[in-house]
Image (cartoon, rainbow, N blue to C red):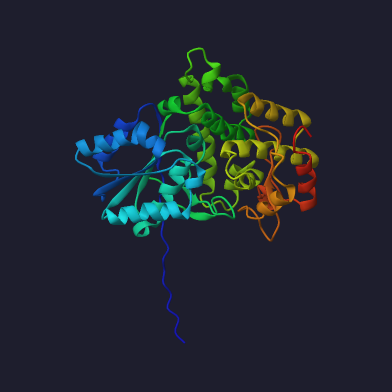
Length: 381
């Protein structure tokens, strides 16, 4: 018998910058000129049909004018497009257009776009570089940062994917002005999550200023860009601190799943009629109800979070048509499940999180306890 050892130790630096501002296409073009993709001969813009019409087609034309070989691919907007079939279609289009390892991807859009485009980048030709150009508050708070890429399946959301980091992230808050108000609300759900787990002062700021990001509450029908810039920066600061400590979600990064154990179960069960932010909002309040049972939060904490989410216009109760048993079954597909035990991340008051044995940031909860609190989470209790 012969044993041959292959030493493959290496140091990897996947660091990148996040640029936050308004109308950042000129900054992206300047970075391309400076060689952010030094080996790329072709650029593929991946977006959805809405963003194609609003921004991506203009970007393609400008890239072409400046001599870049640019291909634009788009798909129908929404979570329903985040599938293995869409990923295969994108890859087939790239192959048909002679893309290879000399290709780079520009993901222009929201969370569905960045998840799909990043997954394509991580697997096409065994990995090509990409950037995220975020056009939504939800993606600025969540999907564009941290390198999580994935597609959904009938079993669960984000079940198939990989960690693959972008070369740079651009968060263009000017694009938020064109978003429907429900999209701003979705992004605010993830924003409230960040404040709940890491920053009590930011939570107070949201209590006072969240409506300034909703057009219907502003006299001129526009977002307050000062608030938009502050919210974008705080989201990035909170998330990057957690991601930097745990790139592969071994433990610490699970904190970002606050509210998601229930939320991610609700999305497919509702046929994606519940938006991601709406599902997260319901999940945030649920973990507070469960945490109240264990003494991690007070009734006042629960009421403050619920009041803020309702003020934003987000749901806090489970839709009555979704069966409790179905929710429990779906929770077993959550990525935090270990040894067939459903695990939760819990707040510790507002602005902090619970830590458990061995420094774990999540803990198992018995099905009977989950079911009891679920039964109290429909309608007005």
